[in-house]
Length: 236
Ligand code: FPP
Image (cartoon, rainbow, N blue to C red; front, side, top):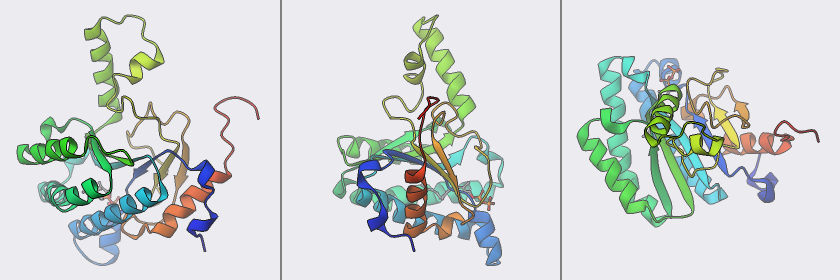
């Protein structure tokens, strides 16, 4: 059994990004509607955020809603928005208490305006917190982010940008690239997530569906990461 004592605290990933997949399949297996899966997915979010904080992970990025997710049935989209609103309401005090700073990547101008206000309020109230950055990807798509960065560079008049110039135009400005990318539910895809930022990330895919992703599964991912030799294109 994987346990917290096995983790080498000197080799912790600073930034973990997660593609939280499998809520729908989890619900289907239980003969329940998809939203039941998402509701249970939120429970996992709360648990994993709390655990990441305890482990001293510095940044946790969660893919909550992609630019493609609008194409899901209206009922599922509005259900996900309601869950997001509820999550922000229920978790703000705990973020403040636990020194967690909320950030959002993606184009939130398309999100219902009341939720935009809740997001901005939570970002503002937690902006000076230092222990963990909880970075939620909302209406996020990496191609959209890259195009947006190109337009910002043009607006700035930068004709010959460096990698740093480009990174500074991404939503993730000032956030280090993920060391570890986790995807649940077995699909081996990136799904338009952080294409630029994961250039050298270690990728860990587990068959476990997101609502079943436990602390132990999280530890397994970190232990697997700690076994890898990261060379960044160089030789050992
Ligand atoms: C993928 O499962 C999951 C999503 C598209 C949404 C993830 C959202 C949550 C976990 C809840 C909301 C998040 C927050 C931060 C409040 P899927 O529906 O694609 O599953 P499937 O592939 O099995 O159908």
